Image 1: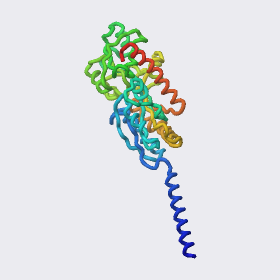
Image 2: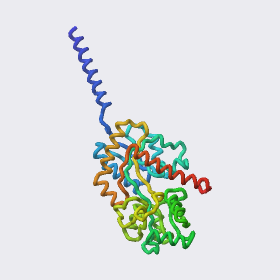
Image 3: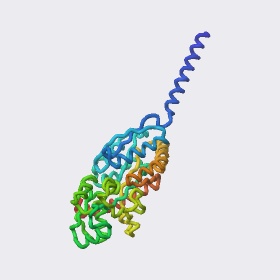
Image 4: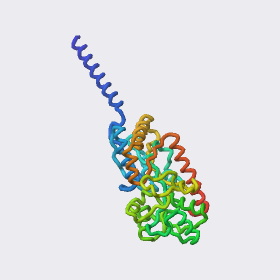
Length: 328
């Protein structure tokens, strides 16, 4: 009888131990394994660099490690589209940029693409648009460029990145605001835009100062205006549109934000937001952004939701006009 009781007692202890072990396994602190970060661009570009740098700093607070997967394409929407299909457990996150919230949904670039499947939880950087010219250009100021466009309708060549794209919409707003007509020439990204400036194929190019960093740093190109409210710390000599007294309707630029699948648990989203808040406001990240021409700009919650909604509202209105005119 004693042996039977002993065996029963041992069995109960073993079962209790297994139960406690299983409970401990289920309650492991997040993150308990590496986190996949889906980057919406090719390796080596601005989006790639910002995503990696901010994540590597956020790791220190989060207590886990990221590994990166690049998924470019469809106006920066291929990566977010993959994120929409990921398990909502905090082990897959990604970046969301301007094209993913504006062009991709408006133009229905990907079947089934639905931003309601994502929760955009933190803004990391803002990257205002700017106008660059060749170092030997006769148009070394925004006023000089506008004066030339007025004197030569349709002859001042300006490089953008495609009809309906962000910088193309900005160029159209400038033309409407000042009653001028540029000869818009589209290029597939900032690299061919830079080549066009160097080769003097165009008179000016619109994109970010960061995109033109190689030429700005070498002195082969000059920034004549940035459509921003505050001076770019990497290029303080470039005047802002606010500084020059231009309308706020001309404020324009890209951004990089962090998103997760919409059903990700609140405590995990909170941990990620906390880690990115520390990262984006850190001296390490702020000092780094000064070297690449972007601005560290943390947002979360309602403020971030309002920011994204505002971008969509203004840009979709402009795209609707192009659609109605048969341009898109």
